[in-house]
Image (cartoon, rainbow, N blue to C red; front, side, top):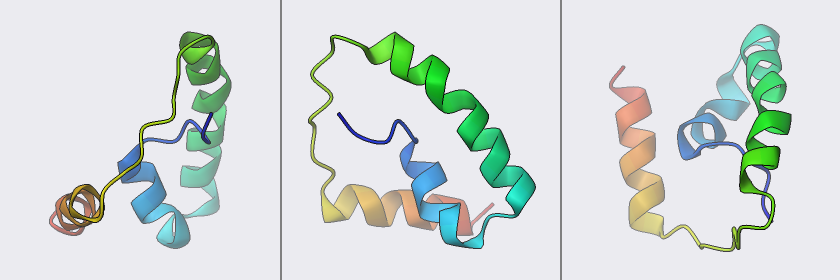
Length: 59
């Protein structure tokens, strides 16, 4: 099922402030409701992870 965080949120999580983390947490229940019944089992490739990480670092 997954944690319902977007890849960008996962990448920045360890560096996020408490306020940023709370904003992410506040969105998760709505996302979960949107995806209920969906097969959210798509694995993220290393290339996708690195691309997202690069995008975050370049902000």
